Length: 76
Image (cartoon, rainbow, N blue to C red; front, side, top):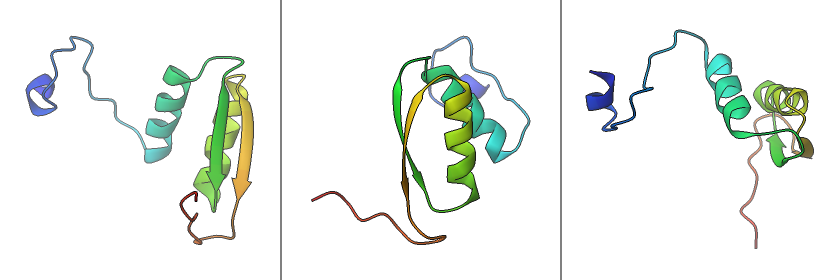
């Protein structure tokens, strides 16, 4: 019934029990391939974690850092 709930016909739809970090890692490793470029905005521990995951997948990571809890202004 997950496919119905998420309105998808993808037969590979499945629930995976885990933390938000596990979900973030699953998303990164399934989208980023070795050699891909990835921009990671870091303003806390989760940004650091995402950069680490991306680097472990072989991505060329560019980090943009701000102090904890400070937002990133939109590009002009």
